[in-house]
Image (cartoon, rainbow, N blue to C red; front, side, top):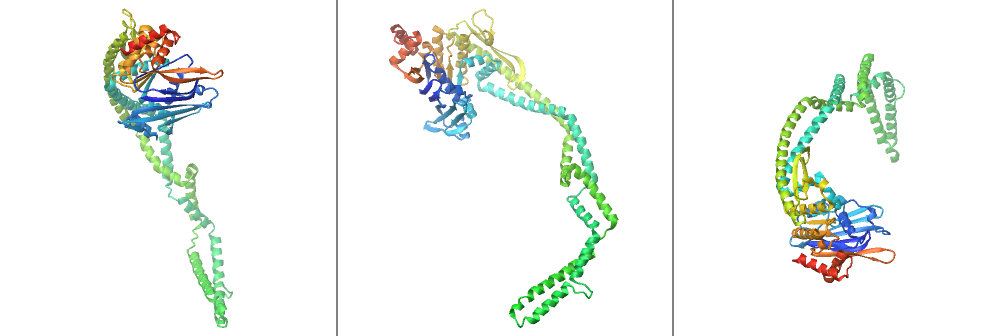
Length: 563
């Protein structure tokens, strides 16, 4: 339940605190005092779209904070923790939950859940488990087929919800298989073209039979074969420069002579001896180079024009693959992945047959589940109609009769039923859909009667009613107040009303009062008791808070409500 809500800079409200608490809270006030802002503030805390027009004129931002009492280990607390927030234990398995929303005049908003920033969508998730709001727009929604079907399903309770869940599971599975089949049929021609293209490309690669890195090896071999004479000449010149059989001096001989000369003379000067070992090392390295060049010349294979032609021919074959695939690795990758893809594409026929068989099986499951759901709704519809009719008698519609029909409709994720809530306002009248035949006052009472009845099977922690008494008065208003008080026996009920007959039944009466300082209108909220409450009731009855007759009437109403 909502324990407290604080508003700042919202509409005409500069700052106000609304103490709520359990039971039935009535909120009254003069026209323009800001009662609607209370519902607007609740909407912001429940994740509804933020409207910068709600920010008080001349104020940079508006804020709404709420304190909820929740089950310490219930689903609400669990969702808060998932969002990174915390609840504060207060004993008895209960905890306080803080929700907040800040709205700037520029249209930006920030939300907080359990002391941590969170998306507004988290507030909306929590709202589904915390509260049901009914305003004039919600009465209009009751006219929609979807809202009427949802109301029936809520009344059906856990058993009907379980049947609907089984149907939804079967329907979703059927729809997924049906969509896959439709996609396969639509893509059959393009998949055939893809398979033909893959076969041709794989055949080209297999015909060449490339090996990893082969193009680089062949490029190196072709370069060597094309320049074999130049390579031989360079190697021979280097070899002869290092060591030859002619009378001309070579590097090996000169290094050996230098080493011997230094070695002989080093006995006269130790400093010269330091050059003996480096000269010897150079001689050894020159000798190794001679050996290597000799081996290179011996191994140099001229190959001849025939081998060069064969290498170039192979390179040309590989080049055709490179032009298509970019690199040899990409061609080899296609050879591996393309073969697997071909198996998948060639399996289309068998796959389609398997999916058709699966769809037929799921169709039978959906048909059975839809029939079970329809039967459950028909049974619930009869009970709902009878229960709401009984409630309407207590809401000053003694001769009204509510009928809920369940007719075949288009298949959807919610079943195959069209649910219609129909009202016969007096004996002899044919029931007509509330979407067409109910007046505003009748629709208000039908909505309230439905909520009272549904609350017995699908309890909601908090109900908020805005102008639920629109279009009614007198005895009907008294019965509306009485039914709201009954609803408050098991749920928290918050009602924004302009009728004293409704407010009289509240266990907590708040009024939104306004003052005027000549330039800015501000509002605040007061809890009413005793004479202050009687004066507000008198104002609601006659517009005169100090009228003796109106105050007497107010006392009479309060006495009636307490009896």
